[in-house]
Image 1 (cartoon, rainbow, N blue to C red):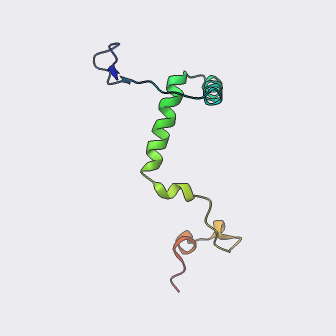
Image 2: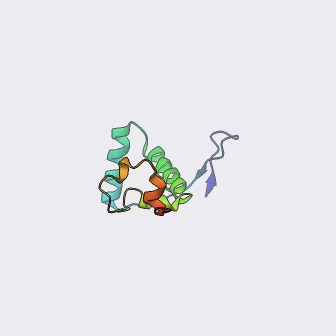
Length: 86
């Protein structure tokens, strides 16, 4: 890895990754649709992945089945998630 010499106060580290042809094409297309560079797209994806790592429970968001079809309207969502205290 080589420290970028563009700006001495910039802490960016230059690195290289390998993508297969389909990954590259889809990533490039998504970046273009968002109006950002491929590099920025990858940086954002990494940031998102790292922030999700701090909240591993988020991968289960929306997947919990309570058996109550009105659970999203429940006044006390803690009862749905952790069980009723009754």
